[in-house]
Amino acid sequence: MSTHDSLLIRASTEAPGEESPQPIYESVNPAVLAKIPMGARNLLDIGCGSGALGAAAKRRGELQVTGVTHSAVEATMARQHIDAVVLADLNAFDPLPLGCFDCIVCSHVLEHLGDPDEVLRRLRELLSPGGVLVVALPNVLFWKQRLQFARGRFRYADGGLMDRTHVRFFDWDTAAELIEQAGFVIVERVADGGLPLSSRFGRRGSQMLDGIALRRFPGLFGFQFVFVCGVRAGSA
Image (spheres, rainbow, N blue to C red):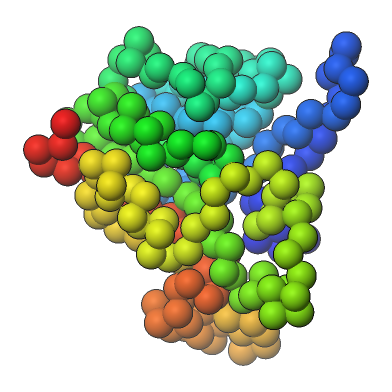
């Protein structure tokens, strides 16, 4: 299984008393983990899934992690790995009572929300001075998906870029617009992915070719976009 697939696939489990399987998000997103500041002391993980990302972040040093999820099954799992878990509908959730955090993560969650702009505005109030927001969004125009569109295929799936629970879709520019319009300034943005068949050129050759491709054509060769953001001065 590729890194791309492992990031975006959903595992399913059937909780007691439930009539149908409920998706569980269990992956650690390495590109997001790498952007969480090593000096962070308290982290809010929106859409925390099973708590895997928070647990990985905690293993790097002293860090208090609070997660938010809409799934009771995920919440039960996450409480085994992180410090606190809030069960809430993310579309209507008021995060202010949680206090302030020096890092907030939204990894592959905003595309599932009806009004991600408003959710980001609420979260902006929780960032401590100098704190960072880390956002990861899937790229609906990744080259593999473009091939499907070119074949006239627009099909939802149980996971991946065309996950049937996605209600918003983003490209390189609209992803940035979403964040900036919510009152954040983008400090860093990267496309995570690679050039097809670049592995044939060995590790060093692959890294060089992937880097060139992602810098020149981020919206084509990146399967996800990762942003590191701060609060824009004067945002209210």
